[in-house]
Amino acid sequence: MSEHLYSPKALGQNHTVAVAIGIGGKSVTGDRKQNHAAIIYRDDSGSYRLAHLAWHEIFKHEDWNAQYHWVDLPGIDEGQLESFADWVVIIASQAAEKPIPYSVLFTADQSFDSTGRYSDSRDGHGLTCATFILAAFSDFGLQIADRNSWPVDREEDKSWASKILGRLAKYLAEKYPSMMPHVLAQARQRELLRRYRPEEVVACAKYYSGTPVRFVEIKSIAGEIDAQVKREQS
Amino acid sequence: MMQQHVETNIITDGEAKYARVYASTAASQTPKTFTSQNIGAQYSMRAKAHGSSALFPDSTFADFHEACIVKFVNPPQSVIEMALARLVETLQSTNTSTATGAALQATSQLLEHVYQLDRSGLHRQAAREVMRGVETSLHKNSLEQANELLRTVDVNSASPRTLSALLRASYRARGLLPSWNSSYKRSWQYLKKAGKSPEKLFIGMHTPSDE
Image 1 (cartoon, rainbow over the protein chains, first blue to last red):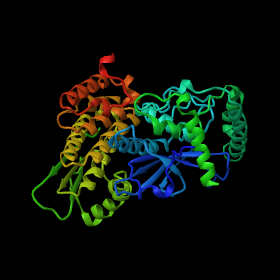
Image 2 (cartoon, each protein chain N blue to C red):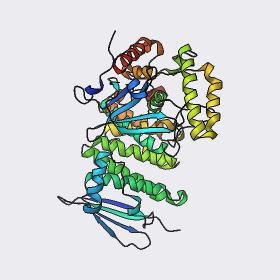
Image 3 (cartoon, helix red, strand yellow):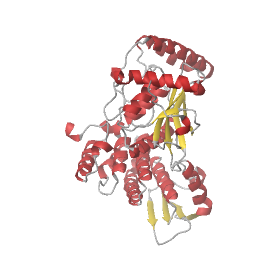
């Protein structure tokens, strides 16, 4: 089995990169079956930082914590990657006024409107940690995944959606009861769920070279990434 | 309504050990002076930690009208960046109907600042500043100013990376920006002629000849 991921400790020591895409398993999420993806970038001082959508309306921009395995993005010029990371940070500061909702439903259309705010269609759509990365790349002119090539209605994804929507419903019921229709809208549409898993987005980033990566091209690689995360982060 | 007057001068006259910032309201024209002791050192440290996103605190400008004269004398680079970003934000917070002239002037100033950063080899900072200019404009729905950046950018003066950053930051709004396509095509052709591989810089985006 191939090893696609660098270890957390390798970042900045054995390997220096402008931007990496990180993936955390149980050590980050507390759940062996739940991975989390994040953008990792090197700032002006040479320190690494994390930028990621952690949960419903929670965008985190924080210091590197060495908890994520990661991939580099050899298909994209280093300067472009630095600009991408800097732009994500700028966009995230705009998003503070209109936080990004968490949703298992992801529209293939433009995610951030011209003002930089998340385009909330109020139909239950939003972003996950993984689709946030896809959306950011896409709106920066880097469509790393051929999103229409992703399968719909995978059994494992339906059970994942049920679990995550349960957590979201509980969270919103306690904190933002008026947002409950946001969960119900997702629940109604989950039979047609097209999920972009964190390990699949990580694989797309790794193997993107100018043409949107198709699902069939990274399916087995994503499986190997997931296995490596489970093996090394349990 | 108070006439808006904005002027940003970056003056170089040899070695400088600190930055002096003059600012005055359009009403009083009374200059206020800040030195690196109370602005530059403190905020350049913060800027180093957080890129150039840390600006002068609101309290610094709290008693100023949005129309102000700002002059820098041999400022540390980070102070220039912070002040320019602040200037753009200040302009964007003004009434759109009266801000047009000044806003367009600020666009010109921002580009001059970006060219200077590029000339200094600070390409990442230049790219970040032009993206911040785009985002600040778009965030306030000032499509005119965002479009002005695209329309007037000098492909000879901006680095390839800055050109790419300008076009990528405005990419998602290209349908609303009349100058996006022409700016993209102009940049592509210039970079191609200069042997700078637009295919690599604009990876993921269509080639202008596709249209």
